[in-house]
Image: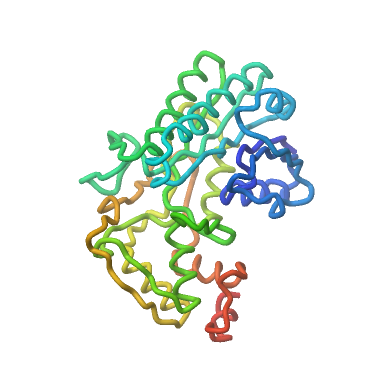
Length: 321
């Protein structure tokens, strides 16, 4: 049995990781300020503390005897980061520095940072590997890239093993649907399954790499356990390039419901292409994504009650099961 601390552990990726580790018999502590998380989704065996990652006295207490820290506490909205860049710098960069200082003080020797594929920006060469020079297009991307560099730099001075996983477009059950700027997969599921209208920015041909949450958690656990991966940056995605239009077709196929789609071609749909090169993940983590986009969408419909409506045919849920 190992002991883990997960910052931001009541959020989407964090709670899936925390619950998996707890189910495997490990001792798991979570700190989360609940600005975007939900304590109720955590396993009852998990020790939860409400607090900010910048609260060093709390961190000192929670870090005692910890084998590995998973650092997920962050603000994550790209559009909001443009409006509130100082907040993103304070939490995503400053919070990482506070955590590293606390780890040095207590003597914790391993950290896995959840970074983002957003760092790459708009690249002509696809798929993107970890050696590509980033195109930092939003304050969020700047903050995650800075957090990586602060972590690696301080780790060299403090004697801490470090790994950064650049996670691409993660999706799965329990993903938050905030009123402003919700993630694309749950947003489109909600609109299509409830008979609403899907608004697509641009022409819908912009592509992303959608990776199911179980595959992300597999990678995180391996990154926390593997030796000889110190100071590595590793992409985590599905390795499959999917356009927004194709995503809509997938949802229509698995739900047997039509999408009512309108296109706002005057507004940008973001970078034109983004696909993860997974060679390094395969080599260092033996990482092999197992859940396809279609299978993942079916699992969400089965598990997440927010998407189970009277419009669904009974056979859809049976198929998902």
